[in-house]
Image (cartoon, rainbow, N blue to C red; front, side):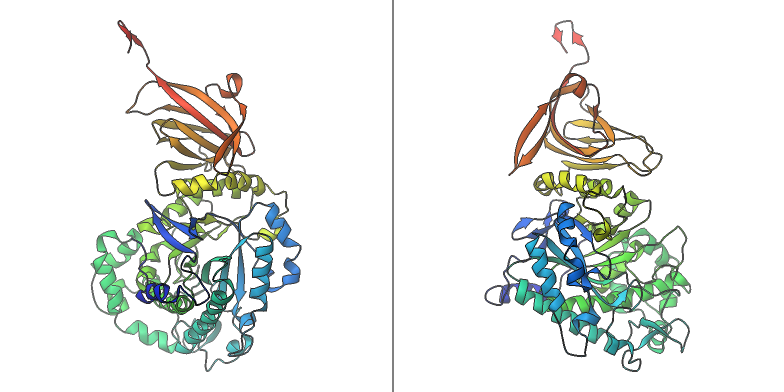
Length: 538
């Protein structure tokens, strides 16, 4: 199930598209088969991204020598933070010097931008809120870990907090509409960063305590009841502990433990962030998402990670509470990359990975996310710390060459990806009229086998990958022997395949080796009978 959008956003597109500083073809999400695509200037756009360190974008001078390195890494998108304290240093006075400087530099280096709004939440805390917010505890109420005790975290239950945050974010989006509404350098917005409450499972401030003792909002209960059969299993299991009770207090409906606290906190944080996003979209409706600090291990309790954030089991709560958000995104630093990708594609949520480890496996994981889950994009964190010769460069170079093909096949079963997890030695799947049979090299610990396959026709494939070998075997429903009819190295230019070496003999024997660095191939496979019949072929 896809996120609902506010009706006013659609109305704005119709009313303001002509003559108000931005065009109707602003970046947006569109359905493409079974997937969603980011569309920029009327064409699908897949983000080969990298996220800067948190404070890097606070200085244009610091970034000046970094931009060429980002280009050399073959990025097409940079994710950069905008902190509330620098955008609104005094109450009601806005300074967009950094915004304009980042836009100028990105354009000069032919890169798109995704901005992160660091405001009420950054990794579960409020470190990037302005000083005039931090120092006025009376006006801007704090989250309490214990009743009566203030913390550095702003409370999701204070109206002044959400109003100030939303007003500042709306000012940012208004400015972007005015200076970028026709150029479309900025393609998405992240609203806050890894929100939630730590180290406890919920806020215990007076307003929060009153809300927890009150009735579960009818909007949430109606959503859960309407989607009962399609709810994410982990959330449904929490609700099922009270036999899926359809009204009552939070404890009566969800229980009286940390999991119930998490549902409560998720609803209120999502409502808060949804209001911030909606205020921004009223000015300039770019696609917007929230990201999650993930549950780190099975059985880890809320509060050990930010409780109330958009972790996988809370995605339905966030959908109900924040319809202005277009998707929820995981920050993946854990080993189970494939499992997390699967969690975040439940119920039609489009996959985007705004943060991931910038290690030797980053490029391989990009291949998998784009190939297997038709992701909007992939982004290692701390991209400004990587050298221009990092291994990611080679992976992104190959992906850049096939991005138009990837975009054309998103949402279809003609695009598949593969990635070696530790202990895995092979993978198999049907694509086109054949079965891809993949053997991995090594143990997958630091340089896993990975790649993607695109079926241009039932018997013709583009193959990109590394650290694996492959062949195309017969599908079980289409038996026979198989062999290469042709196999070539090459590249695409303006959508046309330009062959280099024609491979045969030793280079295209039973299995084709993709080698230790990413390789791009195009091949055609044929099938022939296993035996001849008495009358000829069979």
